[in-house]
Image (cartoon, rainbow, N blue to C red; front, top):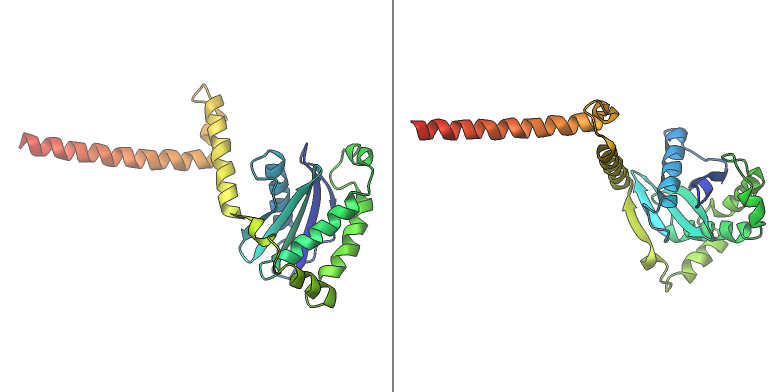
Length: 215
């Protein structure tokens, strides 16, 4: 099932439109949306490839594609056919191409392009049931297509960890004093604890070795 859709600009990472989210009772709407916005930011910063990509997150996956400076992201159940998810994104892109670029460039507030929200809702209905004749035909037509082979695969936890390390490194490079805010970071504290533990173990081993030689 297609559960969440976000459309955003690449040059500034601004989410400009969204579809009405569809969630199960156990789903966390806010968390998934934040993940989608995080991905949009990473893509706009070139931390993720602009090529067609699938990113796994537990029992779900984000699929995205970038065309003409616009990023289309959707969240689906992991069991939802990936090819169908990208057909959905391609349909969104075709409709978005009909919009005047100047109108898109004038948008300044997140999710304020409500006009396209309705387009998303109309298209998403066509992809809710994977067993319709139209959707089965699309899947059948893709059997010999290279689309599946060209999809880049990522894991969400890897992307988050990569960003965490990158931010930490950047903050460390900017820090010139021990009072830098970076030392208040829980992440850095854990790194410091680990380093301290390893250093203590090394000193202990050295002390033992020295004692043996003295004996």
